[in-house]
Structure formats: C-alpha cells, structure tokens
Amino acid sequence: MPLTCPKCGEFALHRSHTQNAGEHLIKTFSPLRPYRCGACKWRGWRMKERAVNKQRRIRNLVIYGIVFVVAVVFALYMRTLFQ
Image 1: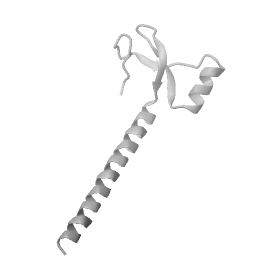
Image 2: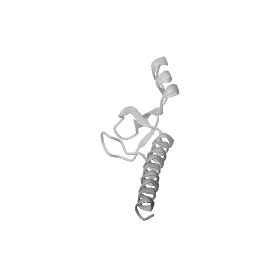
Image 3: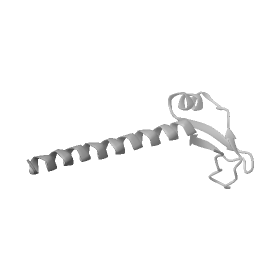
C-alpha cells in the first residue's frame, strides 16, 4: 500500500536513510521510520506499516476478547435466572 505525503498528498513517499546517531537510535528502538517525498522533498517520520497492522490486530483481539467475556458473563447470568 503506497503511503501518501502529509504535505502534498502525492503517492511519492519512500524510506529515507537516517542522518545521525539520534535518528538511528529512534529507528532502532521504535516503530517509526524516516520517509522522504520524491515530489515536494518533505522528510519526516511515519509508523512502519507492519507496526500499524500489529497495533490493529492487538486492538481487534482486545475488543473481541472483551465481547467474548461479556457474552459469557451474560450467558451465565441468564442461566442462573432460569434455573
């Protein structure tokens, strides 16, 4: 999935090299990656796509887990009412 530039909106983003030790540390210890736009030369940090997908999967698992627990509790409650 191509990434759009936040400045100009073009589909011209590509990964950029880190330029100093501080940027290298950020890249190493976070899901952020440097990107550059080929159209307007914007340079900045974006989440790498796998990290975004992983966050979505975790969020969905938490939501489904909560729904499951609520359904089980409700079923047990209803069972005690009709015994």
